[in-house]
Amino acid sequence: MASGSTFSVIGADVTIKGNISASADLHIDGTIDGDITCAALVQGEKSSISGAVVAESARLAGRVAGSITARELVILKTARIEGDVHYDALTIEQGAEVDGRFAPNARQSVKAVPSAQVEAAE
Image: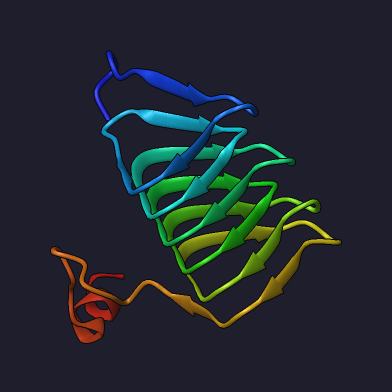
């Protein structure tokens, strides 16, 4: 993320049907029916996302029906998630509901290093 990056807000009165791809950080208070790809995502308590979420960092407080992939993921106590969660760093507040599987990001990372090399470097 560049220091001049922008921040976009999708208000509570907005409903979007379709995928969202943004280089900006997003704050979503509305309803999204589609996949979201962005740098950083902040989801409001009353917001709803039906689709996959891919972000460098995500702070989720509303409802998500779909898979989530993020490096840094915070699931707040008001969050209701239905889908699999992939992460590098994960924080879950007591009271959050997740109906899905958790798995660390060993996925398609471009700079993946075999575990033997990581252990040798430490």
